[in-house]
Amino acid sequence: MKQVEIQPFLIDFFESRQASIVEKSDGILTIKLTEQLDEQLMNRPFYWQYVKKLGKVGETMSVTFITAEEKREQVKGEWIHFGSPRLDQIFKIIQQEGAYTVLYEDCQSNETMKTALHPWLVCNIRVKYRGYQSKDELVSVGIRLIDGTMRFQMMDEMEHKNFVSAVPNFCFTLPKIISDERAVERVTEELKQRIKQKSSDFVNKSHKLYEREMNMLNKLIIDDDKDDADHQRAKDQIFERLYPQVDLEWINLGCFYVSEQMSKELIS
Image (cartoon, rainbow, N blue to C red):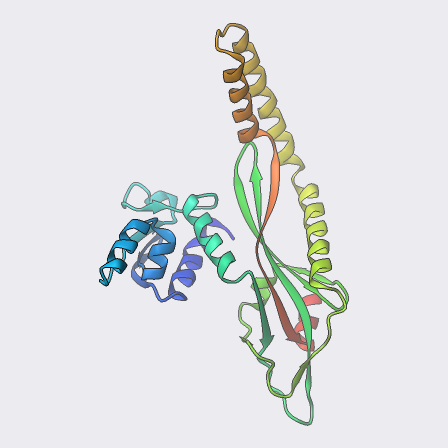
């Protein structure tokens, strides 16, 4: 997901939870929250406890999100981007609501020709880079639980397919040969290997900047009369800010049963 994709993501998130879109323009989005979203996002527990105690209907807040950097000086609102606390908050809500789901491709089949559905585990993961720059990357990986075949950008491939929560008529599911737990291990191993291959430049730049700032700090310490605890705190802050770190945060998982035709398209 890129910065330009955040606004459509927010629209889907809020509309699917019955929030009202008050204003929608390029890079600007104003939302009238539902009571549940207000409680989840706006940190007003005292207010909601008060109105519920009195048996009243609370007034939910409206929030304006700015997703285009050039609009930040034009409109009053929250600048939302990867790494921003608000986007982290939204990711956590999604994670809590749907940590694991099971869905089935809505296939058209008949009694004389039943359709086999192949199991794929879809893993949505946030890769968090911290170093000379901080950035987040959303990765969606599908792994077929019959043979371990993987497909990256899996959610993009399934975006225009229809899925239902029960096995469609005249369809049946093939059994998993690879367990979910083992599949998660394989996806993690593959993703770590890919990150290692492509992040060498990020790691090198981060190390150089980290070493430069530590050297500058060490020179200042010689002429500084602060105690050792202050110096150690300064070193710890530089380490947390600049030392290269790449972390994986699992957002959610889902087992998607898809037709043989779709399975072939995914591995082609």
